[in-house]
Structure formats: C-alpha cells, structure tokens
Length: 279
Image (cartoon, rainbow, N blue to C red; front, side):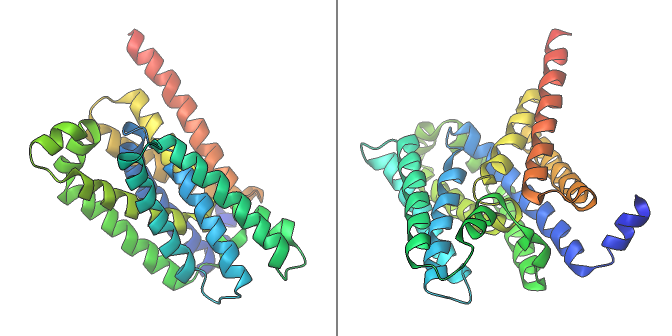
C-alpha cells in the first residue's frame, strides 16, 4: 500500500489535491464552529446551491473562467442572507431554505433549457456530489487555497476575542460598542469564498458536512471555545487527508469518502464524549 501511495504521489495533481483538500477542510472547520454556535450552520448548504446556480449561468454563457461569475454571486448571496436574517421578517433559517431550493431549481432548469452538453445529468451529478475536478487542479488553485487559508487563520488570530463575543452574545457585543455587523459580514463573505473553492472537493450538496461535522465532533469532547476550534481543525484535516488517500486507493468518490470519514469521526467523538461524561 505504501508503494502504491508513493507511486500516486509522484504525480503533481495528486499532491495538489491533498494540499487543497487539507487547506479547505481547515478553513471550513474554523468557520464551522462559529456558524454552528450561531445556529447558522446551513448557510453552507444555501450558498453552495447558489454557487451551483451561478455555475449553470456561467456554463450557459460559455465562459472560460466560471470563478469570475460564481464568486461574486455567492458573496452577494452571503451578504443578502446576513441582512435578511437581521432586518426583515424572514428569519435566517427560512432565508437559507428559500435561497437553497430556489437556486438549485433555477440552476437545473437553466441547464436543461439552454445547455449544449450531451450529458446534462452527468454534469449536474458531478457538480452536486463532487467529481474528478479535484484531480485536475492547477498551481493557481493551490496558491488560491493557500491564500484563502492564510486569510481565515489570520482573521481568527487577529479578531479571536471579537468573534468569540459576537458568537455567544451578539446583543451584549453591540451594547459594549462592538460593531457586530461588521464581523458577521466578514464571516459571511469568507464562508462564501471557502464554499466556492470547496465545490471542487466535495460538490455542492456535501459542503455543509465540512462545516458541520468537525465542529459537532469537537463539541462532544471539549467545552471551551478555543479547545473546540483547535480540535475541530485537527479532526477536519485528518478526515480530509484520510478521505483523499482512501479514495485514491479504493477508487471511490473523493467528496463522499471525505464526508464518510467525518461521519465516522463524529461517531467516535460521540461515544468518547459519552464515556467521559459518565466517568
């Protein structure tokens, strides 16, 4: 098995896939803790479906660079979700559900009506559940992932106490003079960017798993915010690396394999937490 892995990792695209997978998992896990605690964890699901709709538009327009369309639309959707949840009668979870279902349906409808592809079902399935796109990454994709990961880590290091305050008691934070809306907006925009990058890794339907499972797994074992963030990051990176390696050896879908590892990690953490609480 070691010889087989060594042979695979001799190819640059396999190394790129592992680097990008680990970095995206790291970024998603850091954001996931805050999103889960703010009860806004399904923002990943909603934004990923928006990204799917944007991909459909870019495909119809026959644009060479989908990112130029997908990224701005997804970021604008993140801002809209944030504003909608705060200032209108449509609550956050309802806004996410509305946007998620609407974007998915419109995207699929547009692809069926206007797409020139001969395999629409295959293209849609690959976008929703991930595909071999993770194995066709370029150096630009790797550097982009490195840049985004650095930004996410710096945001948490520089604004840790403010993010902590906004996460647990936004009303109190505003009363003390903290511009909570600015930090909410920052988190929403970064989440949108990470989700767009993660679509090549696990597909739009499975992105929420990268955000939710590591955070929930860490919460089974630790209670402090700092410990949960660190544990979530470690678990997410381990699951992503293991999932990519297993998918290479077993020829299984990359995205689904990574999510399966996250589910297994959650199961282990859940039982470990149960044992610890009883002792």
